[in-house]
Length: 359
Image (cartoon, rainbow, N blue to C red; front, top):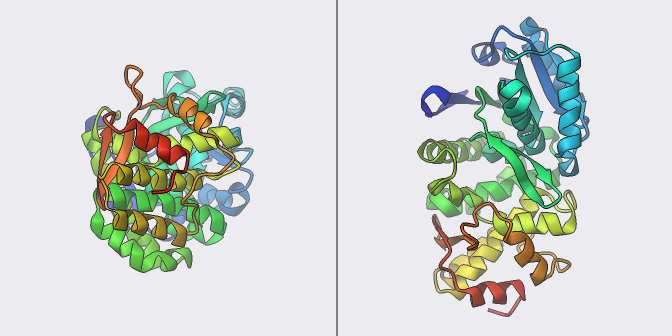
């Protein structure tokens, strides 16, 4: 078991990482209040892990509610299901919500906790690789809107994050690859050694080798914790964590939420951002090829879907949360392990990337 700290003053919390963490009551009890506990999960994860978590939380007599699985259900309607359950069952301001699931459940539960009775506590228990290395950490919570992904949300830090890599044994292969997109992202923006390690060990991750998974999860959590501690509300460096997401969110919105998994869209977005950088001579062609090759080896797309037009990309990218005073900003790699957030990019380089002009 490894424990990392996210140092945020009065909002500081711990990330516990280790196989079997889901079944260890002491990892939860120290972070829980005396009020009621409600586990929020979905109809896919619940049958797999709800009973184990309920046993770990037995001293708190938890209640639970399961919502429909999938990105298309991360919306007001599903959130209202949670609110109705909490209100009907008398949960007060001293209650704690526990998110058991992937990034959708973590986002939904966190935003629900931020809103319910003006804010209550919550814990994150992520069960997908994408959530374990990224979505469950940092307090960014949100639901989707018809006009964009994660457009309605709040910064609300959890009381703790409990990561059990053992839950990844039941993860569908496509979902596992989706999570690897975020792992690759961390190597590209902050850690060349991690990227090099991934080039040599990506197959072990796909094979669900627990030592390899533990290494990747711990390193990504270390990077995420450090970035969040420096820039909690994404006013500066934290925006680097959105590498690939400006393009990726546009893909998800254009295709319809759930058609491509989040990590699949981010992976294509990472390759597109790298292509823009190559066209601007910010990234060496050999580095671009390494990025595309690793993305492909992880079982992910390194090209956008043909169905998304350049016009759709531009429309949805303009609604990106990094836009400032009407100016588009992109996260672009400048080498393996280095990236920048810039509004000073070449518009022709972006246009050539969106229209698939040969390099």
